[in-house]
Length: 205
Image 1 (tube, one colour):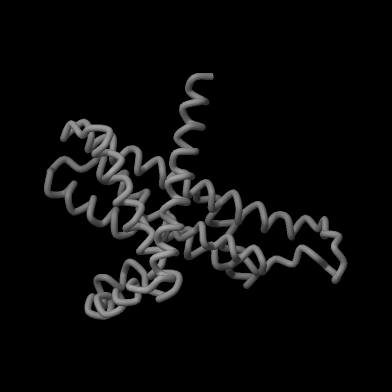
Image 2 (cartoon, helix red, strand yellow):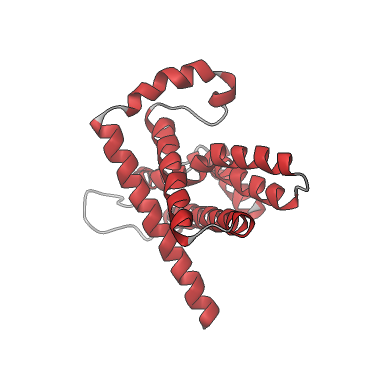
């Protein structure tokens, strides 16, 4: 993670097309760090506070999936022809974007599995309840991504300007917002179970 951030920092300082990855990757790592703190926390109140912070910052992780649109900033075609460039620098940026985003998102899903494993053991949740809570988690995350991508709010805004956040929630009451939230929730569910399946397959092998 440190090496990845150092490399992305170079692109940020050089103001290259993928410089957006630095800030977004750092924000995407925050819920992962909070997840580790939850595992280390000894007191119940501390765990509850950390869990709420985890839910608040988790959309920053899923937000990375929308950053894939910025691949269009990379000049894969040097001319108007349909033949792509084989320049090392261009494909290095492509690798950093795709590998960085999917690695962090996969770690985000792993943290979600860890959270729900702890909740299931503690409260003896049935499989139906687990799926229900998981769906709620992805819905809240999708709402957070919508607010971040289109309203340009971030997790810190909930603390610095809570009234502004409440006023902007009305933006969710539109067909376009509803479509995005449902679509993005479906995307997260598909990726979540796909990564879970891949993990089980690797354990069996």
